[in-house]
Image 1 (cartoon, rainbow, N blue to C red):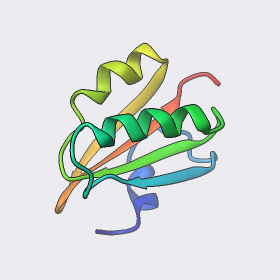
Image 2 (image 1 turned 135 degrees about the vertical axis):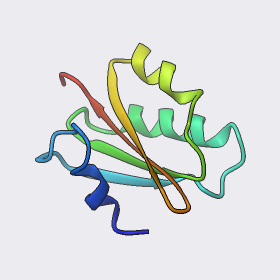
Image 3 (image 1 turned 90 degrees about the vertical axis):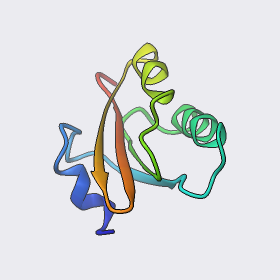
Length: 89
Protein backbone atom coordinates (compact mmCIF):
# COMPACT_ATOMS: atom_id res chain seq x y z
CA UNK A 1 0.00 0.00 0.00
CA UNK A 2 1.41 3.42 -0.93
CA UNK A 3 1.82 6.09 1.73
CA UNK A 4 -1.56 7.26 2.99
CA UNK A 5 -0.68 10.85 2.08
CA UNK A 6 -1.01 9.84 -1.56
CA UNK A 7 -4.64 8.91 -0.94
CA UNK A 8 -5.48 12.12 0.91
CA UNK A 9 -4.77 14.20 -2.20
CA UNK A 10 -7.38 12.12 -4.05
CA UNK A 11 -10.10 13.41 -1.69
CA UNK A 12 -11.71 16.75 -0.96
CA UNK A 13 -9.90 16.92 2.42
CA UNK A 14 -8.08 20.20 2.99
CA UNK A 15 -4.52 19.53 1.77
CA UNK A 16 -2.85 21.98 4.15
CA UNK A 17 -4.04 20.42 7.42
CA UNK A 18 -2.01 18.20 9.73
CA UNK A 19 -2.70 14.46 9.40
CA UNK A 20 -2.87 11.53 11.76
CA UNK A 21 -3.05 7.91 10.66
CA UNK A 22 -4.91 5.08 12.37
CA UNK A 23 -4.46 1.47 11.26
CA UNK A 24 -7.60 -0.49 12.14
CA UNK A 25 -6.96 -3.53 9.95
CA UNK A 26 -6.19 -5.91 12.80
CA UNK A 27 -8.91 -4.69 15.17
CA UNK A 28 -12.08 -6.76 15.65
CA UNK A 29 -15.46 -5.02 15.47
CA UNK A 30 -16.52 -2.71 17.07
CA UNK A 31 -13.02 -1.47 17.97
CA UNK A 32 -12.34 0.33 14.66
CA UNK A 33 -15.51 2.39 15.09
CA UNK A 34 -14.93 3.08 18.79
CA UNK A 35 -11.23 3.88 18.39
CA UNK A 36 -11.90 6.20 15.45
CA UNK A 37 -14.56 8.17 17.32
CA UNK A 38 -12.33 8.41 20.40
CA UNK A 39 -9.39 9.60 18.31
CA UNK A 40 -11.52 12.28 16.65
CA UNK A 41 -12.58 13.64 20.06
CA UNK A 42 -8.92 13.84 21.14
CA UNK A 43 -7.72 15.50 17.93
CA UNK A 44 -7.72 19.16 17.00
CA UNK A 45 -10.55 19.99 14.57
CA UNK A 46 -7.93 21.19 12.08
CA UNK A 47 -6.39 17.70 11.81
CA UNK A 48 -7.33 15.15 9.15
CA UNK A 49 -7.63 11.53 10.31
CA UNK A 50 -6.66 8.81 7.84
CA UNK A 51 -8.10 5.42 8.83
CA UNK A 52 -6.70 2.32 7.14
CA UNK A 53 -9.06 -0.65 7.38
CA UNK A 54 -9.71 -4.02 5.79
CA UNK A 55 -13.28 -3.03 4.87
CA UNK A 56 -15.39 0.10 4.45
CA UNK A 57 -16.53 1.36 7.88
CA UNK A 58 -20.24 1.46 7.01
CA UNK A 59 -21.40 1.85 10.63
CA UNK A 60 -19.01 4.77 11.12
CA UNK A 61 -20.38 6.95 8.31
CA UNK A 62 -23.68 8.03 9.95
CA UNK A 63 -21.88 8.83 13.19
CA UNK A 64 -19.38 11.00 11.36
CA UNK A 65 -22.17 12.86 9.58
CA UNK A 66 -24.02 13.39 12.88
CA UNK A 67 -20.86 14.94 14.37
CA UNK A 68 -20.23 17.30 11.45
CA UNK A 69 -17.36 15.44 9.77
CA UNK A 70 -16.77 15.03 6.07
CA UNK A 71 -15.24 11.78 4.82
CA UNK A 72 -14.25 9.88 1.72
CA UNK A 73 -13.34 6.22 1.41
CA UNK A 74 -10.95 5.00 -1.25
CA UNK A 75 -10.69 1.30 -2.07
CA UNK A 76 -7.09 0.09 -2.17
CA UNK A 77 -5.37 -3.25 -2.09
CA UNK A 78 -5.81 -4.92 0.34
CA UNK A 79 -8.52 -2.81 1.97
CA UNK A 80 -9.75 0.76 2.22
CA UNK A 81 -8.54 4.18 3.32
CA UNK A 82 -11.10 6.54 4.86
CA UNK A 83 -10.10 10.19 5.11
CA UNK A 84 -12.03 12.13 7.78
CA UNK A 85 -12.00 15.86 8.42
CA UNK A 86 -14.10 18.52 10.16
CA UNK A 87 -16.07 20.45 7.56
CA UNK A 88 -15.90 23.87 9.22
CA UNK A 89 -13.61 23.83 12.25
